[in-house]
Amino acid sequence: MKKLTALVLLASLVFTFAACSTDDSGVTTTTPAATTTTKPTTTTKKPADPLPPISDDEGDWKEDLCELYIPYGTATIDGTKDDSWANAATVTLDKVKKDNPAADTAVSASVMWNEEGLFFLFEITDSEIFQGGAVGDYNNDSIYLYVSEDPDANINDFNMFGSGIYQFALINEELEMLPRKGADGTTNLSIERAYTVTDTGLLIEFKYKPVQNPVAAGNFLLLDYQYNDSGASGTRKGGMGWYNGTDTNADVMLWAVVKLLAQGENAPA
Image (cartoon, rainbow, N blue to C red; front, side, top):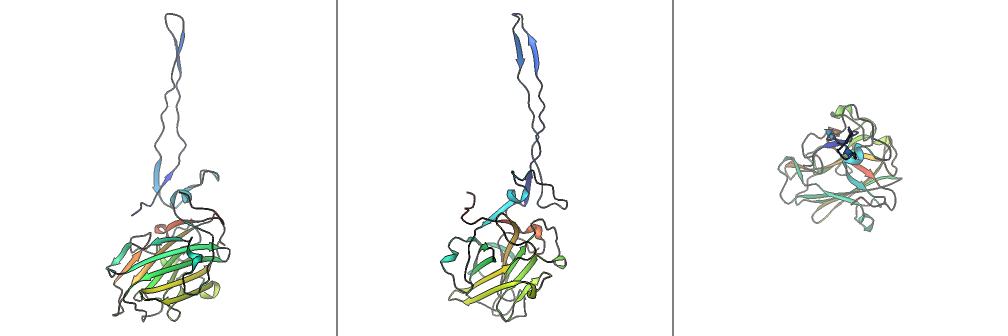
């Protein structure tokens, strides 16, 4: 698992000592300057009292820790994967967060953005789909989508989820709770979603428009994905995740830092 640490760039302490002497021939010689530099120190990502950025030009911890660059784009939310998703930022949920997901289960998550909001596509391979549990319950086969519009957020308890910090439960329209955690509730969020049961599992498209910090090129967010793998018995067999490999999902400091790219901008190599 990637380490959640940031290199805090400190100003190098340079001590220069120049000494001059004269040899028997009368020629003056100079001893080269001696330089010592301190090693960069490390600190935990998003400390309780965040350090100020080095400068606007050099970036800050968010740039250093960015795990995913989200391209500019749009999609029609209709439960189908079309060509618009070709350039989206796609990752695989390959971390086992909880218990034992079925061996044949595989999930990928794609994301892009424009001024209308964030667009998500989840492609789920699962031979045994169950969505008959309670609303928002993880005992359904479901996606939990974690988003913080504020990259400087420092909370570690669901009870502190507020405006702009959400856990969305993406199941089906009858069993959804949007968001499952987060203070705004469905009435204050602009949301679109569509589902398709496929031959191999599920396809879910989802769009939501951030309200606390409107999306714009260069903005940073915190993001993570989870798939709850259930079965015919209606009991979760396991949880799969992308960035955070633990089952401590409520701590935003364990979510990935992501950046919104400008239209036509490519992710760094």
